[in-house]
Image (cartoon, rainbow, N blue to C red; front, side):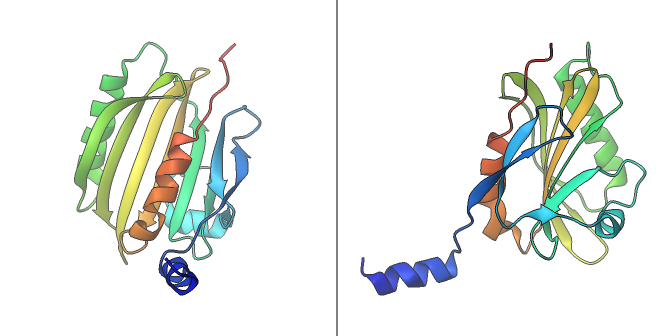
Length: 174
């Protein structure tokens, strides 16, 4: 492969560099994020997540069309089976999210614990959305990650979002 071919490939498939470790609210929960992802302004978060359950923390690309949202919510999931959480989220989302199409719903093991893993597409007012959501219990709270992109941008960011997802680390709960 010559240098022109390499440059042509790089122009078609831009290299997204991981370089930032993000920590959630001083809790020791970390994940790797692309260098280009920055904190999304609150007014954009309010538009993108108009419910009272909006995440407190969102990072994203320049136009906020691809984001990683994360938060700890006050729901205590201790003692609840992850399969039950998965079923509850599936039922709720199927009822309230317009045009939802399920790609995958399963329990996975990540960072030494079980997570509900929900992958879906849906319709928003102005575009179609691709979501990968993770939910687990942490210190008597519910930990949620949402890797979200427009369907149009998703192919460009899919690999980086999945790598970021795999990088999630949780401390011991002691």
